[in-house]
Length: 376
Image 1: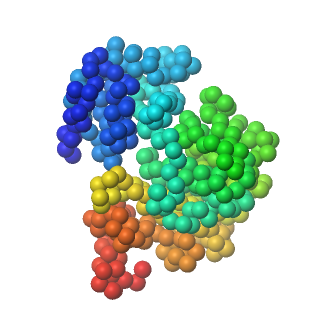
Image 2 (image 1 turned 180 degrees about the horizontal axis):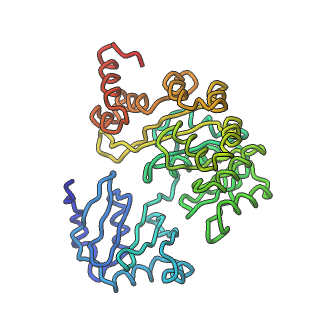
């Protein structure tokens, strides 16, 4: 990989000693998604999924100390020497919000910052399928947004909650680590709670959320068995629950939840999922054909009676066929989503093939779409 489209403007724009505010402002203006800071290494950035090396001088210990002093909240700074990893959010007025992580690398402090825009993008701006809005109209159940790290899960969830905020009168409680998008009350009332600041854990936050008259609960990530169990309970008791997982498709998502539990618990958990799961959105980010960033491609499962039956009978693999055949109710496979993005000119055929987990099938679908032989 060529690491050399180096943001050359930064050579002159950021004077020594390292000025973190100027660097972040310039990064946001150039469409950077992530900033990586390490001692004894020049700053690195990620744009459109590609890591790029800047031509700035390697950061010194003094530079990193200045970064910490200028942008890390006092309550987080107090924990740096006693914690290996710390999450926090920081806001630069007029520039952006950032989700940040402090880490230790070879015994030295490092930091990664992800750009989080002030404004929440709409479902339409993200080119997400209309069925996404349908999930926000549900009264109860569990809706999962899944995908690898950096696939836009938080942004998709934020756009869904923003749509809900504009169209319904609900109380929405979010549990996040850390908070990324800040929601302003429109028709809804938001209670946004951050781990380590407003609550001590996802399970405890969920336990008390159920006593705070919520209609909708957002769980930043279902990390463990206790959080999953609490989320299923919340969905069972009449709440609409949104959450994320690091899984790549609907079948893997369901299996991941089940396998988080002990073998003797799995049958009852599977039945809980069959009763509460409303849908899954698995997504990947694909380079746009116009080179203006990336766009989400999505596999969508809408949990129909047939899907519930497959889950309850432990025939979960059959859900793949439902997803492929379910276009009439908003379901689509990842390859179908990629095909539609190609057909609308948003991504190239090559990008679709490279992104697909089934590239041979993707090629057949593309051939069929343009030569009249497709069965998809």
